[in-house]
Amino acid sequence: MQTIKIMAILAAAAAEVYGESATRKLVVSIPDRKIALIENGRVVKVYQVAVGAAHTPSPNGTFHIASRVMKPTWYQPGKVVGPGPANPLGTRWMGLGFKGYGIHGTNRPDSIGKAASHGCIRMRISDVEDLFERVQVGDEVDLLNEVPADLASVFAPAQPVQVAALTTAAVAGGAQ
Image 1: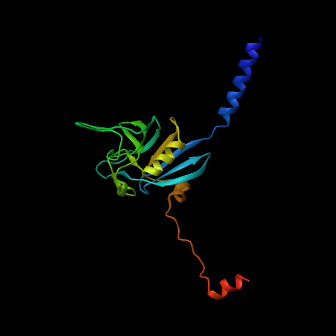
Image 2 (image 1 turned 135 degrees about the vertical axis):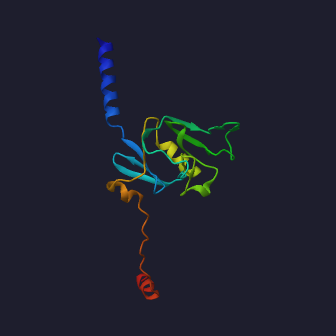
Image 3 (image 1 turned 135 degrees about the horizontal axis):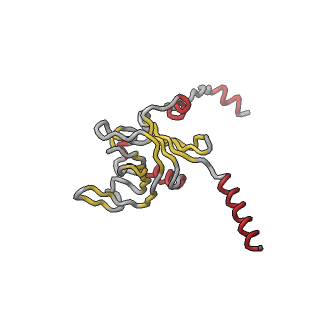
C-alpha cells in the first residue's frame, strides 16, 4: 500500500512539472533571414541567419529538432571535416530530421543575412551556441517562405530611435 501511495505522489508531481513546462518553438523567416525563439507565445530572442541559396533553397514547413550535437563532424562525399575552425557546421548542429537539413554555426560569418547555404540555417558561432543551450530535442521549428501577419512585426527591421539633441544650456541646467 505504501508503494502505491509513493507512486501516486510521484505521478502527481510529474504531471504538475510537465503541465507547467514551457511551450517553445523556433520560427525561421526565410525571406527576412531571421530566426525567432518563442516561449509561451512570447518572443525571447531574434537572431540573424543565412538561408538556402536560390539553387539550394531551405525547405518550407514544420519540423522538429531531432538531434543536438556539440562539435559536429561535417561529411560530404569524398570529404570529412572534423571539429575545428575549418568545419562548415561551426561548433553546434541541431538536426531537423529532414534530408540532412539543420540549424548550425558557420565558418563563413560573412554569409549571415544572405541566401547562401545549401538549404540549412546558418548562424554566427556565438548565436548558435546561445540558441543550442535554449532548445531541446522535440522543439518545433517552422521554416516559412511567407510570414503570417501576426508574426510580421517580429521580423521587421529595427526602427531607428529618435534621440533629442541636448544643448549645452540643457545639460548645464540639468547639472544644478
